[in-house]
Image 1 (tube, rainbow, N blue to C red):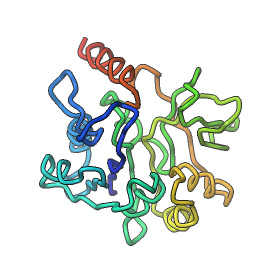
Image 2 (cartoon, rainbow, N blue to C red; image 1 turned 90 degrees about the vertical axis):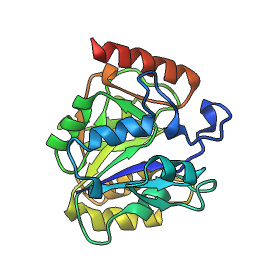
Image 3 (cartoon, helix red, strand yellow; image 1 turned 90 degrees about the horizontal axis):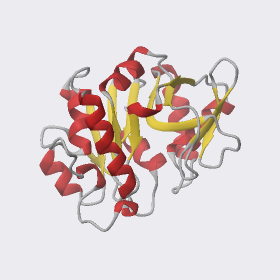
Image 4 (cartoon, rainbow, N blue to C red; image 1 turned 60 degrees about the horizontal axis):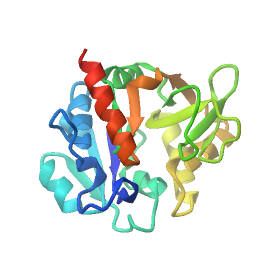
Length: 228
């Protein structure tokens, strides 16, 4: 299995900075990316990790000199569909990928790795309008996933898996995406080709995506809670 962290974006909604958003410092002394890497290394070898970098890539490379970094030089014009495409293994192999701005409890990663090989970790309930939303069928299979989903069931939090046998179709789907598409567009294309993507619901207080300063404050509160 390869584990890919998408960390190429600018993250301007968090506020002006010359740091990639993933290098934002948390109250526990770790960066968002540093915490993700540490948690991944509890389950996977260092050689399995890939960072996709772009904005101030040199700072991420300096922070993680032993991790393979792949550059998306078009990070300012392209979205996560193209960043993820750059990191897919050349041969079919199970992959796990994470948005580089997600703070999550250690149990979330363990749950994802124990779940179905082609799956998305999700929360349930009320969703922020800017969030990536989803709907499932009665069996928990994803029907649609995007920011435009109507009557959503919850949020897709940015921790996902695809099995080796589904990777060739996923690759071609990401290739067919427009430069500004999120990778969820590629997942929807796969679903339309009968790939079964299972939802893995987790409690809402075990994960948060950091987009705005108020999200960072919520993350700090969650980190304190998780210590108790």
